[in-house]
Amino acid sequence: MSQTTERTFAIIKPDAVAAGCTGRILARIEQEGFRIRAMRQTHLSKREAEGFYAVHRERPFFDSLTDFMSSGPCVVLALEAPDAIRKWRDLMGATDPARAAEGTLRKEFGSSIERNATHGSDAPETAAFELAYFFRGMEL
Ligand code: CMP
Image 1 (cartoon, helix red, strand yellow):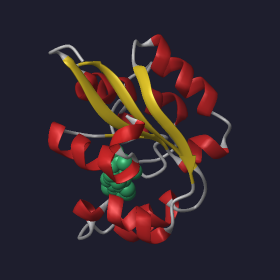
Image 2 (spheres, protein in one colour):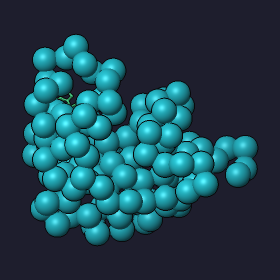
Image 3 (cartoon, helix red, strand yellow):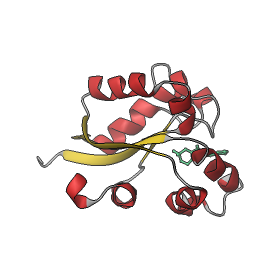
Image 4 (cartoon, helix red, strand yellow):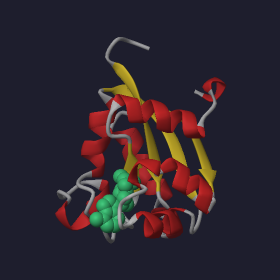
């Protein structure tokens, strides 16, 4: 891994998978220059979704968010690129699809602030936690 190469954690959320948008989102990921280091489709239990989003436990949307995230299969990914964390957040766009810029994934595939198609780590520490939550070291 070169000095500037970084890894981030991404999810194609249950809304986008159910809508049949997985392939188009994966194509964008590759077109934008990310290397997919690991990828798996999984159906989170409520408890697994709660563990993943534990930092949001006190938020009013926590119960609804974890219901949604455990409502159907999602695709979890380890992405690698120079400046991957920022680059992936830029490609996703704003959390609320209504506020996301044209050309971003959430603008194109998201339908609400909760059902917003994709997730991405927001900092190196969260990327480390989130990658380890889903992938064993030997998979990366
Ligand atoms: P994500 O990037 O996965 O990080 C936390 C998630 O919580 C976020 O995307 C949204 O899906 C959800 N979220 C954030 N803010 C709100 C909100 N105000 N109401 C409902 N869901 C939210």
